[in-house]
Length: 68
Image (tube, rainbow, N blue to C red; front, side, top):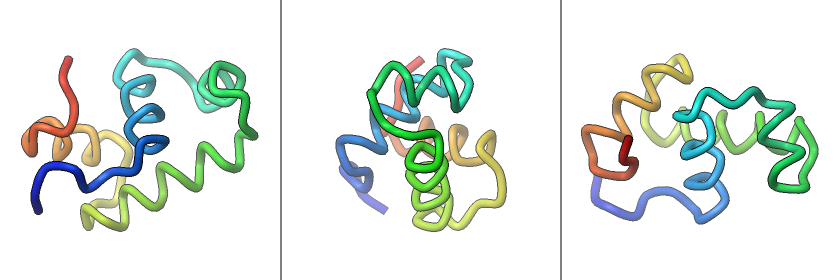
């Protein structure tokens, strides 16, 4: 996988997840529904072939898609 695998919105969602924000907090911050937040997380997990949010964060950090 190369840099740029996430959509802008997926990137925003995971940047907030790294800050330990809840699904509800992310939804409110971005002005979208909690279901949409979960869909972005799920889509990203599928792209990465991982089974948890935590694994997705680790992979995104490894790939240079996220910074702490």
